[in-house]
Amino acid sequence: MNSLWLAEIKKIFQSRKKRIEVIAIMLIPILYAGMFIWSFWDPYGNLEKLPIAIVNEDKGATLNGKSIEIGNKLVHKLKDEENFNYHFVDKKQLIKT
View 1: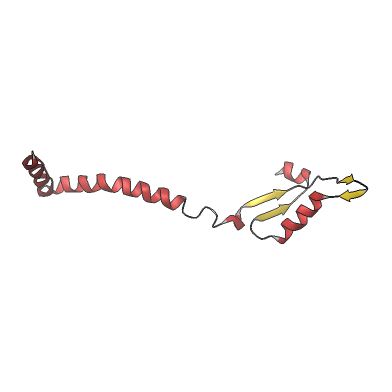
View 2 (view 1 turned 135 degrees about the horizontal axis):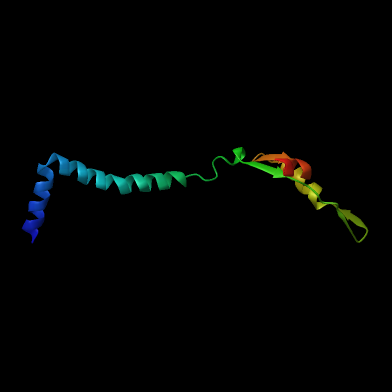
């Protein structure tokens, strides 16, 4: 049985056309795997280019006589960050785009 395998391999390497076919068949999975790995290599590398619209409609609340405005605090913290491309808009602008 081993001699059959060897004979087949010799036939493949003797014919130029068959060598090209075997190489092409071997390259397809390598190319597919390479593209797949490349596409997921650094998913967080360009987050600063990702546009994100921020709409703050928080009206605040009162708890135990204290005014709480968590929405405004969050917006101020987001304005200090530079991880994303934040756009602070109102509801009308958001719906318009």
